[in-house]
Structures are given as structure tokens and as C-alpha cells.
Length: 594
Image (cartoon, rainbow, N blue to C red; front, top):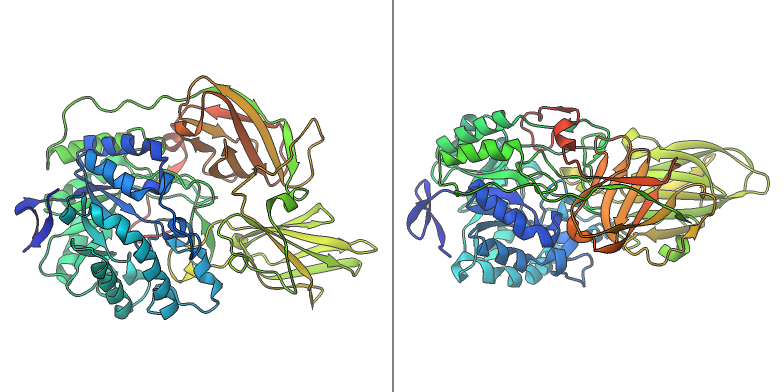
């Protein structure tokens, strides 16, 4: 593959002028069996490059583990991109933001109570170095200088919006170079953060969603010489639970893209294809109020969550045709969608009654955080005894993020971080009762100082002013449900319940689970974690990638945290959800405006 260089105000590829026309496509948000399809559609749009982050927290879930297989097989993804004739911009972080859990930083970093993330704190740098020592040997064979597709590598990510620690950024630059990264390095920041996030001698790029002339001028003022590039052109936006579905008009986005390209700048569409926050991987924002991101990362992108082209794809293709060569030939057809009338979930298993099958309790004088339990995602079940009968006021120092409280197994209330709730009144019966608190990690904060976001019950819990002791903290990561014993025909348990059903398909195809009538929880198909659902919306359905299904019998498991009516889930082929949902234009620039 040709090698990228900068010369004056241009990129050059093997000595010839070159413009990067890229699109964001995160391999970890797309089923690996669908990577090739999404890459082909990127090329057909007219892109010559794709851009991807690397999620440290998935690749290295524990300090002594490293995974690069299945959906994390980054070398395979890079090879597919090269086979499709696409270059790659690689953004390995270590922090990626991306509306991803913790901004990609692994939760085990937070086991150190006073660690300073994204700084030159020696404990943090030691962990970063160990990660890069594992990652870079996988990546360097795919650098353009070695005949691979990777044209350039990013150092950190929007650092100027977080801090000002030149020693930290210089350490990362040195580590990448020592690790064999000999292609151009770059940073990206919002216009007002360029000075804080830049590294001398490293190309600065800028992120924005509108006002191209103004924002490119800010980049030129900061960097008098060098190629102009928008590394994140925000052509859509993400959604949060309880908000409206955010859309950006295709014509408006296309007009800004045209202006950007007419200025001679290179661009990366953020996103070309957003994909899905499968399982528990969504992030959150916290600007004085905690706001978790939804499961879908559709992003109102040119390629929707199911990989189908949209009006924005067509509008962008028309723009690109005025500035570059767009492939001839027919446009991709929508993928086949599966339509089932409904799946009856006849088997049930109580979460509280099955807790000992899902995790082992750890005894201690106080509740332990998820990080102290060595846990990334899911829930923690806390239990202790209340011995004083009568009216009782419980007070929790911090709930992160959502607590369901039970007294002898009976629901007693819910406390939400999002609502700034920390107290609950209940009545303890004569003889005392067992207090159980089920706490859900709804997504670690991925932006700003809030990334130091420990989960579970943080700090003491008191009853009528007296601190409670003698706790059992049970991690429930829900990464393996095989130990559950489902009962058929039994009355529905009170409280959080797993519901199981089976359904038949002749052949795999994409579909959506319609969870109308359900309240809040998670869903799995054939053991594959689809993600969270919540009746407060705006998301109403969960995307099911076709490769997750198999010919014949398939299993569906839904964890409903509250009560529901009819135990039936519909499969809906209609993918127009994001086009018809109530929406609003994307907020103005400001990477994580709420």
C-alpha cells in the first residue's frame, strides 16, 4: 500500500496529492460476520479510508488478559479493509470517548482509589504501556510502511477538552514510535481545545459538525502549515435514555460536507456506520446530571444500525461525486429482514432466587464497589440484615447508577443516580428482615472529569442514621446464563426475572426485538447479549444481527427488572424506527452537548 506523508498544506501518497475521505466504522460495534458488508458499502459511498477506535477495556478486561479474536480480531478487520481497497485511520486511544463505556478505559484502573486517569500518573502510564506492548505487535504489520492499510495513527483523543499535561501526550507519542509506529501521527480536538490537545511536531486536526469555514480557520490559526482535516465531522448524533431521538437533516449535513471539501480539507465522517452498543457497553455523560447512552449507536449515520443505506448516504454520495471518483454500479439493497409474529417466553427464573448461580458473594463490613470486586459490567447484589423493626429511613452515600431495593424479597423502591436520589423510607417488620439492593451499572461516564466513575454502592449506607455493616456483595456480570434453571408453568416470580422462550427460523436474517409492553432490562439471543431496553425510550427495539441466529431452534432470554403483562416479544422487520421517531436537529457544536 502507498505511504502517507505531509508536504506543505497537502497530504501526499507515494508523492502524489491525496485527500483523505474517510468514515467512522467501529469493528467492536458490528458483528464480525458483517464487517465485509459494511466495508464494501463504505467504498461504494466513495470513501477511500475508514476510521476505527480500539477499545482497551474489551481487549484487556483484566491486567493479565488480552483478547484479539472473534469480534475483537483487529488484524482480521484491517485485512478486510485492505482487501476492499480502503486505507485505515487507527485511533488506539488509550482513551477513545466514543460514547463507549468509560471511554474505553478498563474498569480495573479504578481499583486504585486515587489514580489520575489520562495523566502522567506512573500507575496509569504503566498500564497504558502494558496495553500498547500487547496491541502494537498486532498492528505494526498492517502499517502502510509495511505494505498494510493503516495510513496514520492518532495519539490520545480530544485531550484538550480534558486536561493539559504535555508530559503525558509526549509519553504516548514516544511509546508509539518505540513500538514501531512509523506512519504519521495526529491529534484531534474541538476548535477551542486545539492548543491544549496538540503535540509539537504532530499533525493537529479538528472536530466539528457545522460552520466548516469558521472551524477550519481556527485550525489554520493554530497550525499555520499542514493539511486541513476534520477528523470527526458530526453528521449525526447519539441518543440518551429518556431523551428524544436526535436526527440531523440530510440536506443540511450534505451542504456542510460540500463546504468542507470545497475548502480543500480532508474529512472523516463521524459516523459512517454507528452500529450497536451490544451487551452493557454503552457509555454515559455527566454534566451535573448523569445521562446514560442508549443501546443503539445508529447515530443517524449514512448507513443505519442494520447496515442499510439511508437518504443521508445518497446525499453524501452526490456531494462526494463532485470532489472525487465515486464507484459506478448499483447501490446496495437493504439486507433481508426476518419477520416473526411473536415469541412466547414460557420459562422463568428469579434473579434474586438464582443469584448464587450467577456470582459468588464476598463478605465484608461495607458494600464493595464493582471495581473492588473485579467486575466490569452488569449488576451487584448487596445484602445485609435490618434488625430494628419499625419505620426506617435508608440513606445511601452514592448509588451508581440505579438501585432496586427489596425487603425480604419484596420490592421496596428504586433509587436513580439520574434523579439525584439517595434516600428511601420503608418499614422493617417485627423480627427484622433481609435488605437486598440490586445495583445496575448503566454505563461508565465516557467524557470529562467524570470518567473516574466507580460503580455500585459507593460509601456507607445508614438506617435511621446508623451505618449498616455486615454486607454480602455479589457480582452479577451476567456474561454466562447457562447456570439458570428455568421453570415452565410456574407463577411469575416477584421482582427481577429472566424469561426464556424458543423460536424457529428457516434461515438467519437481521431482525429487531420489539419490547413494547416491557419495562426495563436486557436481552440475549442464543447467548449473544443484544443490550439494554427501557420503556422511557426513545429506543423501542433491539437490533438482532442475522449471524446471531441459526437455522432451526433459537433461544431468547429477556431479563425484566420489573413487572410486565403478556410474556411475548415481537420480532419486527421494519427498520424505519430512526426515520419516523420523534426527533430534533442535532445540537450545535460541543462534542457532548446534552
